[in-house]
Amino acid sequence: MSTPDPDWVNLRRQLVQLAGADNPDPQQLVELTEKLHARYTQLQRGGVTAGGLPYPYPLDPVAEGADAIRALAEAIPVMAAGSATSGTVVAPGGFSDTAIQFPAGRFATSPLVFASSVGYRFVMSVNAISAAGCNLRSGNWSGVADAPGTLRWFAIAVNPSAAEGADPMPLPGQVPEEEAEES
Image (cartoon, one colour):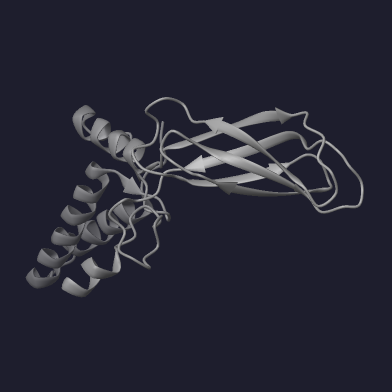
């Protein structure tokens, strides 16, 4: 059993007190009834997290709950992650490249890619990024030849409609600047 919504309980209590008064103000009754109805409507439509992700309430009709869950699934960005092993010994001041293939069809455009190496002597960079894959470059800036070992990578889809200079990954529910200016 779920906990009753405190706003709903408070509004109902106020309405019952006002309606039971000897001489209730009709305007106040109308205002409280409208607030109660508005809160009921909110409760029926589910909620939204602080990050803007929707979720259904237990009383939601199944169809509206399914819509909220679909919106949540669509708000989560497309991602991929993995690791590769590079056994190539890299001379001091040199580098080695390791080609990475993303899961087929995962990205429609080039994603943002982040990489790291377990080898403490290495600096990682990513280049030749496409929707199909990328190249991980392990640079050895130490004075000792070594192999990078395990390379870890993480790729996340970028909003392809982001304007030049705009945040390519707005938080869910965040309004892009051009839309905010129009309203």
